[in-house]
Amino acid sequence: MAVAFVLNGETVREEGVAPSTTVLDYLRVRRHLTGTKEGCAEGDCGACTIAIGRVEKGGVRWQAVNSCLMLLSQLDGALVKTVEGLARGDALHPVQRALAESDGTQCGFCTPGIVMSLYVLQQDAAARDGILDPEIHEALAGNLCRCTGYRPIVDAARALCAEPAPSEPPVPAPPRSARIVAGDEQHLFPETLSELVALRSAYPDAVLIAGATDLGLIPAKQRRGFPLAISTSRVPELKHMAEKDGALVLGAAVTYAEGLAPVEAVFPAFGGLIRRIGSRQIRAMGTFGGNLGTASPVGDTLPVLLALDAEVELAGAAGLRRMKVDDFLTGYRATALRPDEVIAALRLPRLPADEQLFAWKLSKRFDQDISTLLAAFRVRIESGRLVSLVAAFGGMAARAKRARALEEALVGQPWVAVPGGIEAALDVDFAPLSDHRASAAYRRAAAANLVRRLHLATTRADLPLELEAL
Image (cartoon, rainbow, N blue to C red; front, side, top):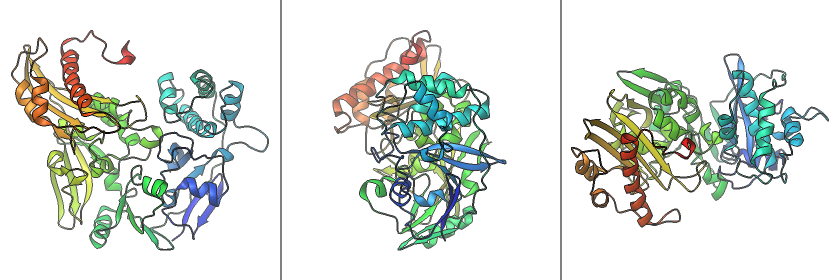
């Protein structure tokens, strides 16, 4: 019933610490490993980055994660490395040495998080025999501070990825617990779908935890734990990915990092969007099923699922049932999920050869930011005429929603010139709100401009529409 993991090479068993304790608080307060810093405490700044290792196929796969959002119970059975665990005696680790020699070190607050992101990047480079500059920038996108500028940090990353990672003595991961209890908290870890459904039926008020990138804000910011939580992370049926009956099937507990390659292979536009969901630290933990289950009006994947006419598979005491994602989302953070059910999988139908998918996200920062507005379009154009259109938007209503009036207004129109009536149709579909991210007027204008961008993307292949294409 204890949490067991390996911390910087030492096997640890914690029996008296609440499982909802954030890993950041545990490291700093209980273990006095204060190299890991608290900045934003919401997964934005990267100052709290640590490395989590999981044993896979005889080796260890390391991922950078935000310790401020991760719960202590999620460490069970894992290998954990903090910035204190890199150096050997007085000898700096190559990551630390490279940053120092390139003058990439900063005030000391964010540098440890950058060190850990680069540590994981070096492990990736060693496993894959090299790394490219875009991957370096992507790996560092979750570490926002740049006191010394970008160049010296990137120089350090290039130097690291050009040399082999130092060998580390293997440390066996400890056995995992099915139940972690401390004080008045209990976290359960089912290992089959039937066991998960049985627990969900027995405890309908329990919190379901997948990656905790959203729920982790409750202990991190509100300082409240979860008396009873059920994890989905060990259920193999929920980690399954496959092509079946003309659709890409993603288990609900598949993380963005795990699902990126298969999704990008089938839906390149969706893959590009996934790369802008949080940072690598977030994508290592966040799941497709979790993003759908929160039903946030600005959930990044939801407009794309709507545009693809995707389905969700639900598992409950009565068995499996399937419904359209459009029917599953019922309102602001509300879904058709029954108290005894869990999201089991998502089914993303392949596009016909004559259809195209586009997905565009508007936010204040390109990387690591919540959507102000997100649009996804599925189109078919024949002989200069728009034959079919599915348009879905996030950030325009209480839930991600299709723009059916817009679809009806545009389908059948000539597609040589920009069609008229875009704003009028969107006004039928949406009455956006003003908030701290954007005004209603901005959202209305931006949504219309994304429709015009769709026109350019499908009629002017020579025109660069992305900053990276310039």
